[in-house]
Length: 385
Image (cartoon, rainbow, N blue to C red; front, side, top):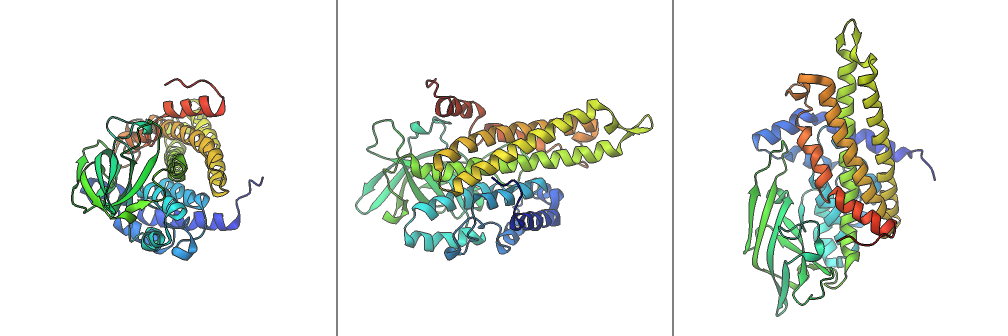
């Protein structure tokens, strides 16, 4: 096991960090407050090959893996320009299509997913299912050679900037209660699909939506993979989702910590920087430790996923997500506390992270469900629900 980052990873970090610095947190927050999308940043990231770094080279991607895409996510978030659609489009949807799509589906969708010219959202969460994916009620039934898809989804990111949504449903005859997801690519302009924005108290350019599907008619090849494939196809998307959520949280923690460290080194009270006080320096040191440990687990998860170990990656990705979320929330809270009133001003750029970092604890899966998973899958404890 080698903990020395290879040169290509170091170079990728530097290049992505430079792109993030070019746009910066002010650009990101201006887009959010003015109702604009981060189209310029997304376009340039695609042109530079960052968005599709994990996708196969034969379809226009970088031919690397989740380790590299996590670097892209972490460095953009650490620059204050974290792109939520990186979690969804190339990581979840791109990986699922690359692993389970037909040759024609890969040719149709992967090149655009790789360069950012085609964006795909992901729809799994439902109002009455929450974290219990076994209770998904969105159903698909056959109508000749076509499918009719009906149901409802909630908290679906970036539908207004997506060309399609990869919807997790169930075949209509799935009566056992076991999760047998069927995955369908649904164009966002498909008749019968309605999207309504969910108003959120977030300073973020990427919006959340409720989706209503009323007998959305889809061609046979809208189905990705096998309708009875079970958990394998879902893990192909959910493991990368957790890895990318971890990378985003690690990046946010780094961003907040950097802001706090710069401030406490500069802010002078009683003739000395406030960083000289252990009440200030020790919490920041602890956050640094927690962030680095979360990052190591995230890198382990990405390595396991890239090696083809989906089950091993599931354990590590869940652990990384919980640890990174805790580090991000603590980092933002301590940054605000260290800055006092300045931590809540627009000028210092930390206050918008209060709500954004909190998302890491509840999405894409709550910390309680992660603890359930670890208790049952890792420790062999009885199921509690």
